[in-house]
Image (cartoon, rainbow, N blue to C red):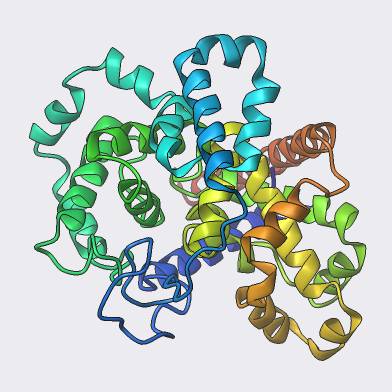
Length: 387
């Protein structure tokens, strides 16, 4: 998947440079508009004392107590016979994930969906062994710089004495030892922090391993090529789902990397309200990164869909401002969940665009290699003349 609709060696290089600047900027941002609300004296139902994620109102319950218990019983039965369901009735698992995993079952379900439980059994004692390793000193310093920036309004991460920051450091450090080829990327920190809010530290670690190595494979490697390819794929899918929004972005040269980097790299953890985020992750852990594409397409289409909005966005900066701060109603749980499964795109569409972007990426890489070779041959000839 390529960053631009027609990638070249120059566009790839500029995309990487842009991405590095965006990632550095986001690293200093604890959450989207995190200081917009006052600090409360008591936490909300998710443990937030303030910030963008703070919710003053109790969640509107759509199920009766009896319906909730019945749904929990179904999930308990399904998790007890997990292999059978995944091998023979995956559609039922997907259907129930889309409805939302019951809060009481979510921890168990996420462990099973990611394969974290299997890895914990397969590598017993491995997490502690990784923690006992010294780790890369440079990476350790980077993690320590970032750990206090993650959800500082949440009860787990309020200060250094809270268990959250210590556990966050442990998870990130352990992963950097577990997978030294990736090491540590700033965008991983909010993902790990989010998992720690749902799971005990060792459970969170193995889910984190699955997220980094399977769900977001190659997202955090140097150069972040996979993100650039997915940016191209998102652009192509947008052309199908929201032609007017697509044409507007093309007209004003708004590259997808300018607005989708934080969405995808941080797995929506700094983009969506908490209730929406939990529901989206229930689906993401079941269906994969396609869910993030769908969420992104819904946000872009809803935000730039109205002609009135597009007419007020007279350039790149105005358009980015709208995309980076979409109306709250377009991020609400009911709106997002209603629309992501009603988009006019299929799995075949995803697969087709994925293959196209892979082909474009290979072509761009071959062109880069040819240019490098020509440059090398020219330098050799020049050196030969001087000697």
